[in-house]
Length: 375
Ligand SMILES: [Zn+2]
Image (cartoon, rainbow, N blue to C red; front, side, top):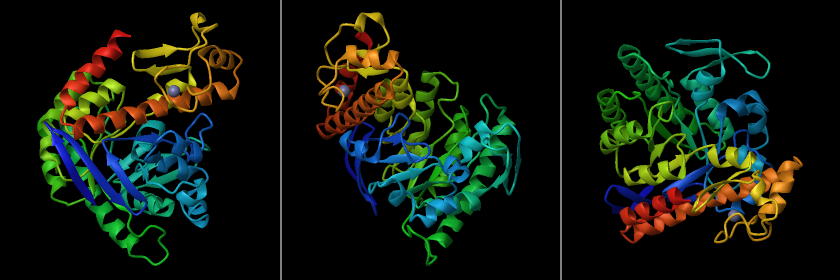
């Protein structure tokens, strides 16, 4: 259930109730691809760094260890020892991006596993069944991620098929949630808006899927090569055609500035691999911009990454020590950077929520971006 708490301009502040607890939005979901954040971050760490929602990838878990294994182990919550909300993607993105050999048909997609080359078939029903076995809190509908750029005709055909697939997902999830041995019988379903950079196709699609009364709506297929301005323009056009009283999720985005700009355009769910991936390379976020800890100037720097940060890393360790660990390729170096970066993102979301609560989002956003760019 989605309860809108405040609206400041178009920025939304809400509380989402799930069987695994409440989510305060705007929220950043922390990406744990195969049931863990890359960089040796455990589910216990996630609680310490203010993670509200963990996001796992259906495709990866289906290929390894197998969703049948996860179901036998009691579902992903029990398996990874995490009792808060989990969102799973549909597998569609990986099917379309990782697998070179694939064939799209009305019933679904035939492709080869990137692990062992084994032939796999995934369609709307299979995606829902896998996500039901994983027993995530929120499942994503199976859609096609169209290539960028794509012709108008390709896009229209693809979006029409995504709509037909979405209806099949809805029917299948209803069936699965009614089965006796289903682990999470209250699994929620988010639909996905597509249409590339064709604003009119996206708007029409948004209207059609809004009528299906789903638990939430995502905007997919952005941040795939178009400019930031183009992405913001699409959000300005499409978001008003999606239900305001439901989660509005911008998939795979983005930098702190992308998030600040998108919140202003009505987005309240985010996920992105940047903070963990950058952290693993020693690139860390601060309120005055990003630092590369591998730089020689940090060799004798006794300060924490960010003096204002209260994360487990900054409370104890110096830039010099972390730099040494990264140079020595000690796993702890990566882990400390990933913990800090995710804490930074989760804290940014907290500040965003406070600013919307106080009806000062626009001013907050300007200030925040100015400081980040000055650094
Ligand atoms: Zn920190």
